Image (cartoon, rainbow, N blue to C red):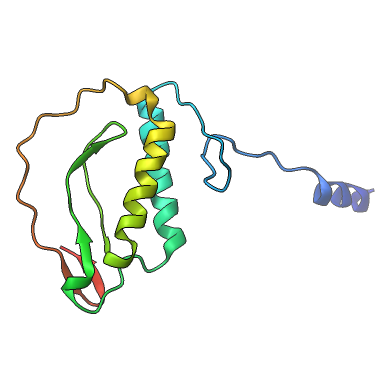
Length: 130
């Protein structure tokens, strides 16, 4: 009897989490609040960077880009650092995600802040950082 139970458990369909936007499909998700959209955006950014592997890899500081402050998807002064090889791709993918999924943040009142003078981006230990 336990053999049958194990057999059934092995072939039981798994439930699918549809709360995360899968960029391999053309569909978009609608989030009812800006907080939900912002959380999905941050998760998407983490997943995107992980998929690129060594997106911060460098040999000189000239190969590093980023640290630009911009308001996106309910995040005030969003910035990231990457190597120049991946920077434009990451930025474009994040903008596309925000355009498709952050409608709940339209009209979001971003914090007013003086644009800070960012520290230089350096290549240290073969990784871009500050």
